[in-house]
Length: 126
Ligand code: AMP
Image (tube, rainbow, N blue to C red):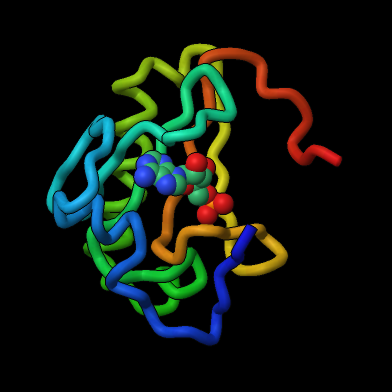
């Protein structure tokens, strides 16, 4: 597993950038001006969706430091919208953002994992 190096600048050739540009296919769930959502290719729960900002941000750290208020508001609203659209708030769900090496982040474009569809077990495994 290769994890994200926070000292490196945004890589426009990362897999999620390619998905945003339509160069790599995905199972799309939602799109608006600020965000894009699609099913994770290797689901870890009955529902496992990734929500990403359209802007070039490596991680939550990068995003929270540099994104505009409109981008931040748009992204947060999109995450909530996707969860509601999937019917997840009724029984509950989980959000997760891995950041950098200790977080185990593999793709260097900010993404929030949205897990649901059943009991999710303990917050951290192992
Ligand atoms: P993270 O470890 O937080 O960086 O998670 C990266 C996630 O991206 C993993 O859950 C992968 O299964 C998922 N992933 C990688 N490539 C793709 C892809 N082409 N389409 C959908 N999900 C992907």
